[in-house]
Image 1 (cartoon, rainbow, N blue to C red):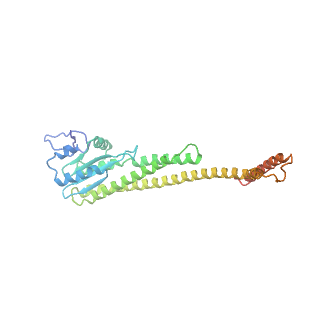
Image 2 (image 1 turned 90 degrees about the vertical axis):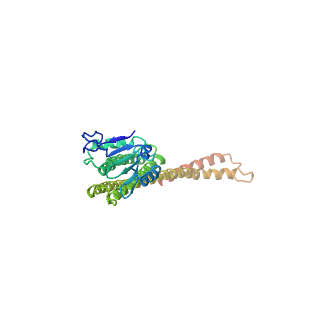
Image 3 (image 1 turned 60 degrees about the vertical axis):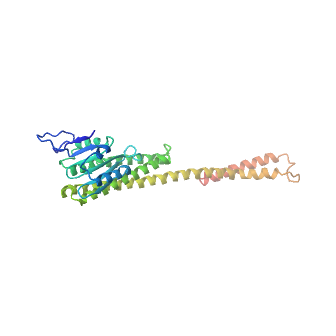
Length: 307
């Protein structure tokens, strides 16, 4: 069943039109099957949208009298997961969203309550939807940065165990979101060029603001991606330091027991001509010398800050 949004009045999207003469709605949300049944869509438009549906990308393509495109909106609670996908068809008379779920309906309700929509035109509705997609994302990045800073403090203070998977999760999220904003910026730039003159110059110019905003978000995502790489390097450095500390302790233990190994190897030989074998105090002397050497080496290592 198609969801219809009347734009006869400048506010809200989900209000029915009050008019003596019924007018066709400017915005529709329909399923892919319903779109295939529409009679007024050119074969070019159908084929182009059919190719976009499985792509899971943000893309727009311009035709002489209309434009088509698709959105792949990442879930900010899990940016590395599968995105919410929808596509659209826009001409001067209507804007049709093709969505087999409820993503577009929720987005349009958000647009209706945000006050972004001020003109009852198809292009302005698309602008409002694209703007709402990225409206609050700087706040989301601030939350993400705070989490990464807390992770860095935890690594420096050794207050909790930090895994490489956690750090790589931040890196993958920043990369995925950065790619998303770059694609949105390219989309907005292409629409703003208005080569097919589907919209007015003023309406096309509005998409430049979306492109600028998306570019700033892409730069923010790149900054956090670089920050995640720094966290990865810090984590690897701590692992290396821990390994070096372990190897240092093992080396010190090996050095401390080396004289004892030499003595046991010396007196463990099957020979009867070694001096001191018959001396009754030989064992006590060897034990005393071994203890003295161990204490001396411990004091030496402590002086060198190796222990």
